[in-house]
Image 1 (cartoon, rainbow, N blue to C red):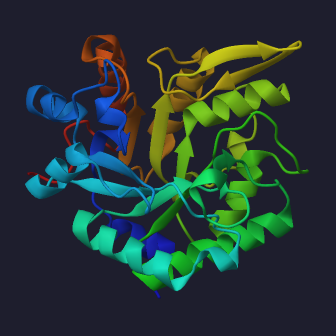
Image 2 (image 1 turned 135 degrees about the horizontal axis):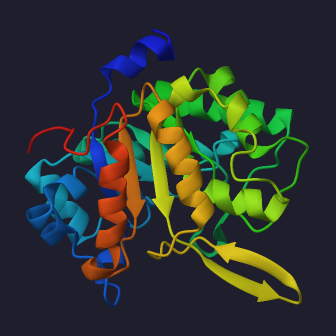
Length: 298
């Protein structure tokens, strides 16, 4: 197989996009994704479809796919570091859904999507143990999924309230990327939460990040909570972003030679509340290799 440095040049530039998952578009005051595409095409250059195989695609995602508009497949139900998770029925279902979506690539939070067997009552999302052994196991999962399905697989740094292990999260995913020879999806909001929880400055660790492997960036809002004196941030995709999220995004975006896509995760908010975020991103992307109007043409 060609190296990632060679493969990345075959990936399309998708531009600025939005995300969804099953049922998100029917939530109260949810963003009308199809209306956004019609009114502001540069804000909705592609759709990142969050997929849990047991649920499939909702009507909004199905409409998008039928139109043949650009999309990516964001998995919501696989623990990449557990070999037993790659069972034949699940892989077959993923292959069929991917064939239907025709994604530019696959990606997803590379943590624990379930505890124990893959069963609806066990679904959650936890970050991995940040150590070299877990990085090796996760890299093996990335390669397994890529080799089986034929799509690039971009692991994403997940959110969390507690992180365990001796590695900085950016060093962990740098190891995963190197061992799997893969690209990365770097979520600026998740990283901002991590840096706050760990007492780091926003840009800590970015000097060791392999910038040429970052293919996609995410931004989203989060909400602070407190329990018995412990403050944490919920990654709930509100329009209100941490200042550190913008600090990280503004530092990263112009430095990424292989940036192909940026997602504003805001799917459960009305349009008027997220327009400022889209405008901010559009302006920021003017100084990158990814102009906001880039992407496949419908």
